[in-house]
Image 1 (cartoon, rainbow, N blue to C red):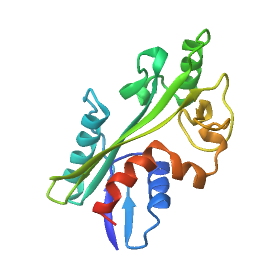
Image 2: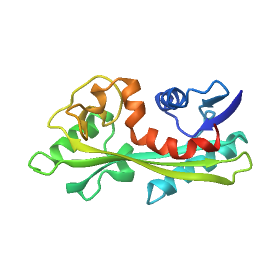
Image 3: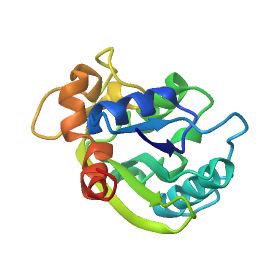
Image 4: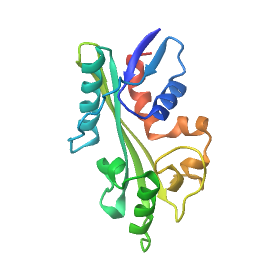
Length: 187
């Protein structure tokens, strides 16, 4: 079995990635304790590379990293690369977002995911970008997912990401779309 370190401290993202790939020959693992890269990039792509480089440095394994976020049109792309740091807790981030949009007629948004894959030597094998378009709901709905999923209504549906099953989400999410573009390099 081939191991690839997935540069995140979020075990849910690793579970989601393993479910999407569903390949018994490959397993994604968390980086070791102490993984805490400084996400100083100005783009999702830059932050993805920073995280992959740090995971590779700590493990010597091939590394895959993503940097994801929610971009809201009327907020000029915010929270964007600061999505994870928009507020101290996921619920506080949702509350802050809904408050910022309380008078907005245009609630269009997109989830964006940039991925970087490095080989064991730390060289870039591939980078990709995936997007999932939709809009922000008036209130949270659904119990699945994490982050902004309860307030993101997927384009073409009336369901939030948090109302989708894991299988449904894994077919259409920004992460799944970025991964589809890059997975041929490790599958």
